[in-house]
Image 1 (tube, rainbow, N blue to C red):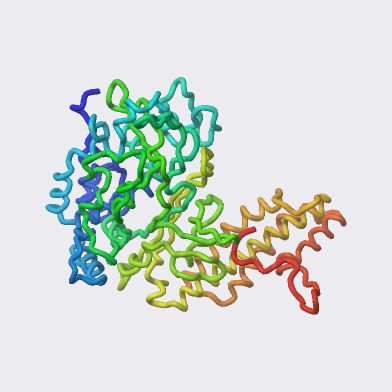
Image 2 (image 1 turned 90 degrees about the vertical axis):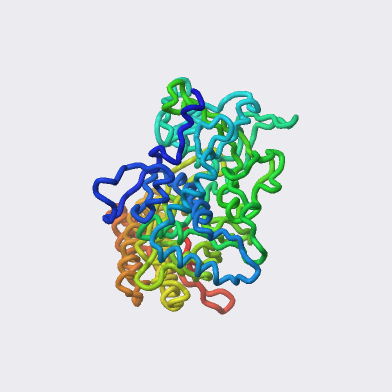
Length: 528
């Protein structure tokens, strides 16, 4: 394919969107190019990218573009104080749209940097891989929802010998997934200045769940999701380039000067290098190089992750779990110190809440993949809340935010006790050596957690916090009776069920050293 058709992302309709009612009825294309996406962000209600981790990655790129276009990236003058950044952002918000001249000025300056198949600097790719890698990785390796090599088929069947071509816009989204969520382990061999390696470390967001504030339009979403730059020192935007702004490709043998500030932290932290290979027609991608980008690992520092502390005292990002509903994370997003768990709130929500004042409130969107550190991907994860950020912020009402935390703890405690009760009943009924995951506990979880979510949001909407513990307990009791009913027809089964029922109320009380305590400790809000 010749460079005469490099597939320019600025104009090609690549990004699927949903339009607001204010958008002209005769001008609502299902997909738009990058320029139209930004210029008409105030008419777009949301991005419609079907792959949650790709949307998570795309948000970070758009946040950086937003900062550049609006001037919210600096430069900072010595006489400025931290509050000035917030005032600038409110001034942009008051204009209700991005300035078209500012958008065109920035995109014109970097007009050649957004070409997917540019022979010299393809967008977010490394053209050196064509000469530094022994071979391509194969198209099925690029598409993260396809099995490749000897891996299991999780989402669809595919044959490495006969891979189906991939549309260019779809290939772009899988490129984004690889940059942020790529697995650790074996990859194509790459040789750089005598160093030949065929393994990589996991991407910066691998296994993590990413949380993003959502406004009523994409314009509000991008402003709310923009992280505040560091005011502890003077910030020079030219010394903090995004990959498409840097005149040179990074040195694969060193991460020095790769991440130098908030914008490069959003866009340049990757552990995988990718190069897309167009097919003979140029209308699709037919192959790809995929290998390591750096031998050193970037720090896993991100403004959109919940950080929590394990029992061993280790800090880690909350995992993407397809079986965990978003309501169970709500108080960790709204509060710095939610009850029952040691977490750190995503930094972006400390400033996003400033935009949720007056009649404006923000939703929360969670994105990621339920996956292991290496090849196994189990399930895509995507969820969103009703408009809640701002209504229960610490700044406006700490007491109500605390009540949200107590509501979550009550729901999780009942769920954890139900899990213990069903496991114990199953073990007793089947003479098992220990209580562990079983058919009853799986059925109970499948029934309880969706019903508990409905109860949580109902109570939150109606501001009904009294009696929550009793309501969740009664829900657990009904489900326990339904799941174990099959065993109660026999005397032995009935005894096993009734003996295990005590777990619904915290376990059997026993005396120890003159003190009464629970044989099953009070749940701390986590599901066993």
